[in-house]
Image (cartoon, rainbow, N blue to C red; front, side, top):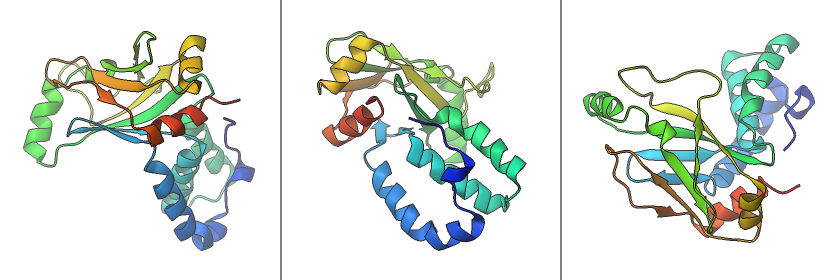
Length: 195
């Protein structure tokens, strides 16, 4: 997928006019890009559209209109767009109760490196977490991580051949049976790998 440039973005005024319809489009698109792993870990697989929405929202909230500042946002978010040989996702660890969340983030230290994807009969692929900056420390993990799954040619072929995809977590503090990826999500992820 091509990176976003300034010409792909609306001005603040244009975005104000387009925002509601664009938001509905993106929310519908995200339905087939979300995956729950158990009750408390959600993955949102990013692509060009989801990242465009993130950038437009940041520019709107921060009222950014200067070219250099817009480019800074593009430079920050473009690395989250898959490049045709990988999947990239935002991982959210979600516990409503603040005290429980604090406790669980301590217990789940390192979980971001233990989330795998298996395509058909190929070997599992573990996520490469937080390449932009470290989000965990020696005592606890963060509630938000950015993951990249680097796929080889065999795995990409298996996805495009509509082989089943399952995901799992190998972390003792979060026992989970492997999760089969629903067909609508699998099909959406396959689009990230097409030329």
